[in-house]
Image 1 (cartoon, helix red, strand yellow):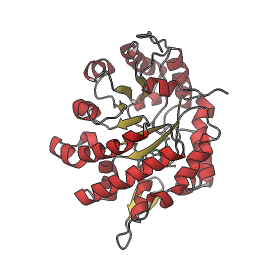
Image 2 (cartoon, helix red, strand yellow; image 1 turned 90 degrees about the vertical axis):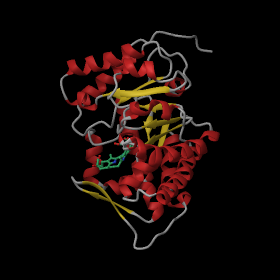
Image 3 (tube, rainbow, N blue to C red; image 1 turned 30 degrees about the vertical axis):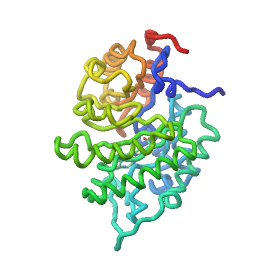
Image 4 (tube, rainbow, N blue to C red; image 1 turned 135 degrees about the vertical axis):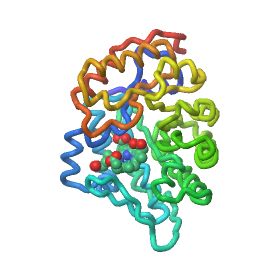
Length: 322
Ligand code: CP3
């Protein structure tokens, strides 16, 4: 099979016949195959065992033919560097248990299992692999450590962590700063933006395309566009027709379907998808995605339909490819 580089070409703003598509949390609970694996293994076991993590990453690619795979892991594994234990509470989400005394381990060895998962995936995948980390603000919020020293430590560890993923073979990286964009202005400028700037600047020399996802990103288009990222992932607060007018041309746009549309009828889903694709028909640098992670109750049939539909929706060539 030849390598499908549609995502990389969209990130390079090349003209394409259709938009690439992948879905945040595509390797997760809406998939019966994932739930079957989870019946046999704890979440933490799936994340920490490279063979299993690679298997989970591949499920949605084999099933639906997405244009990218995302590493199966979690944004909170970075906390292991500081001795926090990730505890997955069945049905009650996730919690981080702090160590008895402060420690700081090297990310390269602590998170080496992630590099091993990436190398395993890269040996068989025929689509680009997206590596990721959490935004420093979002990670510190889950660690209950929103203080400058901690934001700084998490930023430093995240730089090494993303670099490790790139060295292992990640083709693209996404930063999930899920909570940052919803902050009031003062906090956004002090607790989120400076750390994102340092993280992105440190990664830039590697040349890897960087996508930044924030809920509420449309409130900060100007600030986020100046960070040096390749693309920004948007939620559905601002319709695509408006985003398209406000986001600078050099920034790739990703998003922004309301995930709950995958839980309902086909008609409203199609209407939502059409609105997005119509708005982006002749904009180079567009990646189809949801505005937040897919929900556990999303319909697998809708997802299958969605991938085929996005792929069959013609984009109007805007400039010729080189
Ligand atoms: O498919 C993928 O996107 C790859 C893996 C991935 C997971 N989490 C697996 C996961 C990714 C990219 C994440 C990102 C993540 N994790 C974010 C940022 C994106 C977002 O949704 O805002 C955040 C905030 C987390 C932290 C986290 N992980 C929480 C709060 C929880 C518990 C609540 C929940 O959503 O389940 C998790 C658990 C988690 N991470 C699951 C998965 C598949 C569910 C585990 C299970 O029930 O088996």
